Image 1 (cartoon, rainbow, N blue to C red):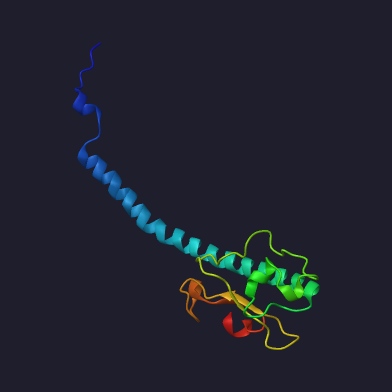
Image 2 (cartoon, rainbow, N blue to C red):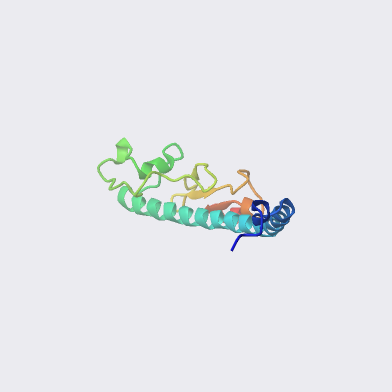
Length: 149
């Protein structure tokens, strides 16, 4: 039996392809914003987890060297000892280098303002500026976290 259709009739027409692409475009227009919103929310959750992890590492280090890092030493003291604490330093206190926040910026560290206070550790959120709402909201723990969260 011979095939009665020609080779041109076996494929899709240009109109059919345009309709399919239009449908895919409409679906993406509806779904993509939701996906991006979830992606942004996951960065906020990651930032909070990283800040808590840094806080725990700083507390462990404080038990060993009896102080938090100065502003000049910052979070790098978690990886490398300063000369004045080399004997009591038991680090490194993080398994890897000090991470950057989920938006690619270094975490902010401020030493405690009082001897019994906690340091402030955090990030300025997705916009990189103080304040903000939603994913742009600052994420901090420590003695200044009451106003930052």
